[in-house]
Image (cartoon, rainbow, N blue to C red; front, top):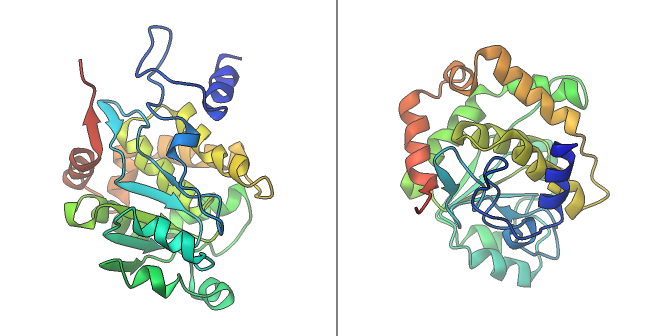
Length: 245
């Protein structure tokens, strides 16, 4: 019941304190405050303000999103104002062929346009999540390597709908920074609050947590994907803002 209440409070965007005596730190910014409002996709948001083990994720450095191929002209200008250094594409070739590449009017203004395609060879739902974690070592490693490089920031990463592959990488990142799992789950479920037509189930994200736990924790899991402690620490140094006492 306590977890349900916390998820509802965060999901409704009530004002949050940095930390409370009764529980773990809560976000400095509500879900509504983290949202990047676009007409063509409702699932773009800043990870800034989410708590970490040593503080909070800095604002304006890491954004998650759905595909940016349908952006309006106004959307393009909104994303340009984020002053992105890197746009990271997770879609596979068939998805880009079907829906088109990200808008040239946007990509031409971003210094680094990169692709780390993520795919699953089998399954749907929870099974697909397990396979995505198993089969995409290069994408997981490359994602963390980009975040460890200050010149890559600010960075926006996306798949198609911005919920599954993007959700997995977001969960791994936040887990590595020490964000409480109930808040990682809340951010994951924000996708369906943003776009009620999306299919998002909390049990699917639990597969990520279970896989990490079976590996011996997030450090051991990321080591198995080629992400050493030096890279993880560089990511923390780049993204974490300490709590001001």
